[in-house]
Length: 393
Image (tube, rainbow, N blue to C red; front, top):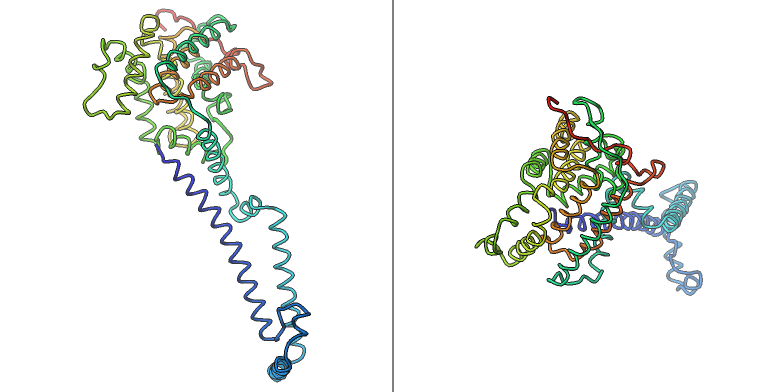
């Protein structure tokens, strides 16, 4: 995982650079004016102070004018005076413009497209500061039980959503490609990504940088190799295996290791309690939607960034699609699986803000299953879940 301090330092350095550049420009202009004033013996004091000058100052001024008169022609002296006035006017104009456009506008002019990256970093920092500022409740046993009850309510709510009956997809039908893209629907909905094709967004430097930052900050993925390793892990092991291990452990001590620190032990204990609470109702295969949905999103992000080819992304989504339809039977069940895995993840992370997260996921599922296309919603409703395949498929 990338330390958010790196983003903070980068944004701070950009801001300091903008301010330093402006200050340096103004200082150089002022120094140039002062040099011109010294040559022409133009007083920088107010008129009242100048009139209070001594006779000696006047004599010195006259002497310098005579010296300049011998060195330069009257036309040259006049040109120097005009140059000084132009410089001062330019400085005054730039200061006025800087004040009018503000710091954001000034930085945008100086950094161009890079300002989008800085802005994205500042927005991220602002959201992190808001989260840090919010009062968090301690994730104790009482809160864990409340979150179990909340999850049950959300799962029941999703089960009531309308959904078309599954349909059979031919083996090489284009529906499979679209279905694979829609497996990323939960995260795509939370991030307002496009679900109409493989690309998650239009290709702009700002958006590409946002996706890179998201991959690094949330997943610790910095390139192709780490991307493929993570997708492979989610496809073959993931939370499904972890949930299974916790379900099969009769005591919490069986999932604890001597090398674990106190934080890891508490995390494993919360995961074990979660599995023990639900193992009679949900088998490990119910966790498939959580693993598959995230792997599908990583495949699309990887293609968008150019870390994998379109053919590779399509192949990954095909395999994920087959795994999904083998374990799950509807979009409702897929969404429920995603909430199920999402709460386990929050508990393992020790994040007491799991309540709001479950709310966001539920809203995303509702939009995908019941929304309208004109609102960029209802994508699951328009693509029925693949039904049971015939022998010889």
